[in-house]
Amino acid sequence: MSGKVFLVGAGPGDPKLITVYGLQCIQQADVIAYDRLVNQELLSHAKPEAELIFCGKSPGNHGLIQEQIHELLVREAQAGKTVVRLKGGDPFVFGRGAEEAAVLKDANIPYEVVPGITAGIAAPAYAGIPVTHRDHAASFAIVTGHGRAEKGNDFLHWASLVHIDTVAFYMSVGNIAHITKQLMAHGRKPSTPVAVIEWGTTEEQRTLIGTLETITQDIQEHGYRNPSMILVGEVVQVREQVAWFQERVREEQQ
Image (cartoon, rainbow, N blue to C red; front, side, top):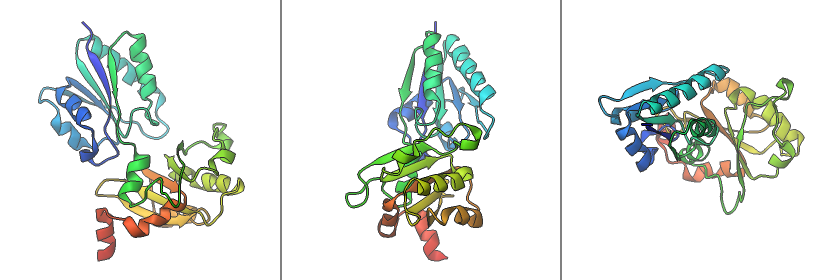
């Protein structure tokens, strides 16, 4: 008899931000296949006999590993096990959850998708930045930030993006020069505020504020790396009024 697979969003980093249902899935799982950015505190809620399988991917090394993950999910479910595929953020936001769901459907394996809080909203919130605001932003977009024209995979509609009030770029630190160049070339003001939030919602979180004109150099000078969320828009200014997370305490102590 086939088991069942749950594609679970673990949230953005802080283990308290997982959903109640997501936590219940972890507690009931026979097998948990978890990603690199999942907070491993969540694994402490698994049954003692549960099998924990690391499925982390490093930048530029996704293809073969993803196929192996597909095989793992199918194999374990066909053995009658309850399987949790634990993914950072939300399974369907740059998480390849839809690909895994399609594989499971083709194999006639029951599955559920358990949404999670995505970093594009949570990281800015922990940095004191709302992605929408009555005075500053009525529209919001989440965008993959690692497409490059010279690599033939820059499929973003830059001319449209510049008309969206707040844009959250995922996986984008290494491509920040290209992003800022394209936004300014298509009409976004060089003075547009930008926030870079590294390790958002965790104790290691730190936030860098700049503009489209300065942020590339700022990132280099301060050594920001992935995982980082880059937020572009006037809402970044709101941080001055509502920043609340512990990084604010650290800043005040310096």
